[in-house]
Structure formats: structure tokens, C-alpha cells
Image (tube, rainbow, N blue to C red; front, side):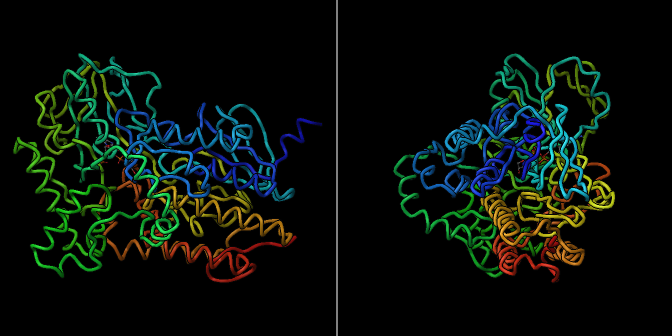
Amino acid sequence: DRMKLFNQLDVVIVGAGFSGLYMLYRIRQLGLSVRVFETADGVGGTWYWNRYPGARCDIESLQYSYSFSEELRHEWHWNERYGSQIEILKYLNYVADKFHLRNDIQLKTRVISAIYDENSVRWNIQTDTGESISAKFCIMATGCLSMPKQVDINGINNFKGKTYYTSQWPHENINFHDQRVAVIGTGSSGVQSIPLIAEEAAHLYVFQRTPCFSVPARNTPLDLQEEQAWNKDYNEHRQKILNTYAGFHTTGLSYDQSALSVSPETQQKAYETRWQLGGLSFLSTFNDLFFNKQSNDTAGNFVKSQIRQLVKDPVVAESLTSQDYPVGCKRLCIDTNYYETFNRPNVTLVDLKKENIQQITSNGIQTTKNIHEIDCIVFATGFDALTGALMKIDIRGQSDSTIKKKWCEGPRTCLGLMTTDFPNLFMITGPGSPSVFTNMVVSIEQHVDWIADCLDYLRKNQFDTIEPTQESEDAWVNQVNAIANASLVNMANSWYLGANVPGKPRVFIPYAAGIVPYRQKCDQVAANGYEVNAAKVGCRSYQQ
Ligand code: NA7
């Protein structure tokens, strides 16, 4: 009957953010039947949910945007050097309209399970709206920072005032006027929202457990001429971007040498220049900041010296400079007026290293030293990153294997794109891919293109399923670990490592060697016909 046919698809895509939208576009080009399921009541993913004051991308707009359509590029104008959440969400809605994507997107629908049926060689996908869909391929576009972390502070339910999560900010305007506000958390979301909440609130208490390192964004309006000049040389820029470590580039000074190989004066000058330019490329001032602790310390000490200059109260400055981990090994924050905000008379930094939170009471937050009376609490407490959204779905593959069981000691994938025992299941920006270590849009487009080409290949060669061999997956996991072990990234309790979520296995999840070797490996697998029935790294396909 019609309903049954409607629920028999070639492809299901889970998620309608940057990944899901472009994946849908590519699947349509292949002429396959497809539906996207999205929990939210709009497209946009990360940029739909994270609406907190000051939410903004930390990669420049001209680079944090799709490359696949020249027409789109010419039609769209970015207003600022760094896109605000509002602007990026508009862009994604524009993309959805322009490419008529909406009629294949089902909103307000959460996928709760994906179960592989060995007999029919299909995935059965269940939604929270009670639907059951059968699809040959299931593509997870579920995002890396989409599953909010559960906050485990005593007494959280006792609080009588309003609570907000930066990761699930309400759509209506929140007014903090006359309010005593607490922000818990000083990662990117805290750092971006704190200066704006401080301008509005009667008093703001910032609860800091681990001080971040933050570099100024130096956001500016982007004029049309600048954008047009960029677009004129777009292909050149794009080539450059694709050959960087992380998928974005900036003009300005970068030394292809160790921080320790130049004189102290040159070193200072280099950091100073990067600090003035602003943004994430501070970490590419020298080429060994992720590999040599001593080099890294020169960068960390430079940031600390800037913080001391910006923050007037020496006690507050001391708390803000008490980082005991290498800069960059927790995600570097990019801010506008973050440190300056602590000079305001209505802002208090509560250093949780000096006074621990004991509990949340009905009207405040009680620490080992004080009772802070509070009217509302903003939780900027982060995400169960990289695996959280995938693990929330009950995913079952061959022979009763489940993702939960398989990944209980850390995620195991081949190229971050597939995982053994789960045929025809793909992940975009999955664990073991460079994803969060890069410009996400650049990585997303590459993953989507790889998956689309793979599906095309399977169809043309009449292969029914594809999955990685155990050997190729083991080799990839080993390589991801080896790269992490050769760098400093294990030295901070970051969400890259799952260290922010109690009980999560401590494993460095992203592939940290950069987009160039990663892309080469992916291309090589594709060029070798997905290394059918073989090979050390690559995928095995079964011909039926
Ligand atoms: P992050 O970067 O994970 O930051 C979360 C912050 O919340 C961080 O400072 C945490 O301290 C703090 N936190 C978490 N739980 C608690 C409790 N229980 N008590 C006190 N403080 C707590 O999340 P964001 O949303 O800011 O940013 C995520 C990414 O989005 C970011 O990296 C960008 O890529 C965009 P901790 O460090 O764990 O001590």
C-alpha cells in the first residue's frame, strides 16, 4: 500500500544541520529516495539550538560556508567577519529554500533507533512520532556538539528561579535586567555570553571551574567589496584552505618552525601580531605548539600576560590565569570583551578552585565559602561531545552488536565514516575524523562528498553493502591514538577526550593530523574501489 511504499527509502539522514542539508542535496543528485529526520522544528542543527546571547562562529564567515554552489556564494552576503548565530541560521534556511530541500525534511521528529536487518539487508528506523521506516542506507548527520551534558550539581532541582542552558536557549527574548545571574561554565559558550549578560544583569556571578584560554576575535563588519574580492579569487583561496592543517587560513605571520628556534623578541612579536589579528590562528603562530610543551608554554604565557594587562584586579587576574594545561588542548576560546568584563563593578568571578560548589539552593548557589543569592542560572556546561548524539540512538548492527556495547571503551571507526558490523551506516564528522579539530564546514563537505561517491560506486558496481574490515578499523583506531599520543592533546581534561563527562572512557576522539593526510587517505580508499574484500585501511564491500 502507499504508506508502506512511502516508508521504503534508499536513504535516511538523521539531522538537518550543515551536514544533513548538504547530504540531502547530494543524495538527491544521485536520484535516490531520501528523507531527513530532525528533532528541532527548524533546520540549522547547532545554529538552531545555540541561540544564547553572543553565540557566534569562531571561524571566519567567508570560510565557514558551503563551497559547493557558486551561485549561492554570489547571492549571499555575510555581514560580519565572524557570523553570528542569527546570521548563520538565516544562511542555512536560505540554503534549504534555495535548493528546495524542505520537502524531504521531516521536522519535530527524533530518530530513536536504527536496527539492521540482515535478511532484508536494510535498516529499520524508528522515530519518536511512532513511525517506522526501512532504508538501505542510514546516514548520521547528528553533530559533534549536539547532546548537552547532564549537569551533576547537587540540589539543581531545588532552585526556584529560572534556569537556562546555552545549548537549548529559548526562542523568546530573555531579559536579565534587574536580575542577579549566575553563569556556570567558562568554555566558548560562557565566554561568548558572559560579556552580553553582564551588560544587562544587575549582577553577574561567573562560576569558573577551569579557566579557559581566550584570544580576541576582533570581529568587524564585512563590507561587500571585501567579500567580492574574496569571491573573485575564490578558487585560489579554496586551494589554500584545503592545504592547511585545519581547513581555514588567515593572512599574517606564521612561522614554519619551532617557537623555540627564534629569539625571544621575535617570538613576542609573532604572538603580538597574531593577538592583534585575533582568532584561532593564534595557535598556528609556530609549527610545534601542539607537540612541544616548552613551545606551548611560550604561547600560554603570552596569553596569560595579556590577561594580566586586561584585568585590573590582581586576584581576579590570578584566577583567570591559573590554567595548568597546554593552550589549545582544550578548545581555544575566541571572545569579544571577555576579560574586560571582569573589570565591571557588577561582575564577580567565583573561582571554584578556591570555593567549591556544594549545592544549589532554592535561591542561590552555596559554595564552601559563601552563599551567592541568585535569581537565575545559566548553564554553559557543555556537551557529551562527539559520541553523545550517536550513543543516544539505539543503533544495532549485525549479530546483535550495538554501538553502545561496541564503543564502551571508546569509539571505534574506520576514517570516522563507518564502523565494522554496521553495514551501510555512515557518519558525517564521526569520531575518528578530524571534524572538531577543523573548520567544520570544510570537513562536512568532504565527508558528504565521500559518502555520496561511495553510494554511487556501490550502485554502479551492484554492491549491496559496505562496511570496514576489522583490520582496517583497528588500524585506523591505532593511528588516531598514535597521532594523539605524539602530541600534547592528552594533557588537558577536554571534551575531545570525553573527560568532561563522568564515566565516559578517556580516549582522544578526533583524528589530529589535519585535513590533508585525512583527505588523502579517504581519496585513496575511494580510488582503490573502496578496497573491496581487502586491505589494511579501507572498507570491505560484499557483493550479493
Ligand atoms: P565546554 O567548552 O565544554 O565548556 C563547559 C564549561 O562548563 C567548562 O568551563 C566546564 O568546566 C564547565 N562545567 C561543566 N560542568 C560543570 C560543573 N558541574 N560545575 C562547574 N563547571 C562546570 O562547552 P561550551 O558549550 O562552552 O563549548 C563547546 C564547544 O562549542 C566549544 O569548544 C566550541 O567548539 C563550540 P571544566 O572545564 O569541565 O572544568
